[in-house]
Image 1 (cartoon, rainbow, N blue to C red):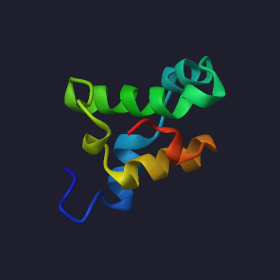
Image 2: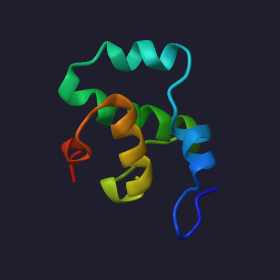
Image 3: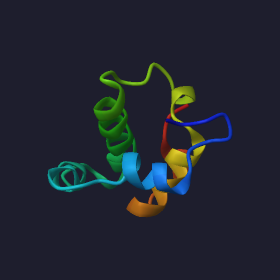
Image 4: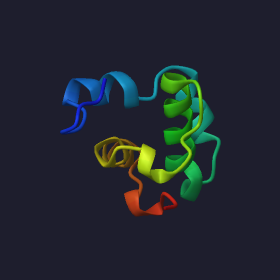
Length: 78
């Protein structure tokens, strides 16, 4: 679970790395929507619901996924 200080590197890998078919699903999206789609997909898989706002996505998770997708973390809507 994410702590007050943010997720550990191990938690980022465990919960925010695309695996299997997730990679195919994300790749099928336009470049400018891949990061947002990937974040929604992983958040839903972990919490069983979509985030109500960007504030529910920890900045470290957004940055981690942005690096893995070579995307701009600022592209995720506020």
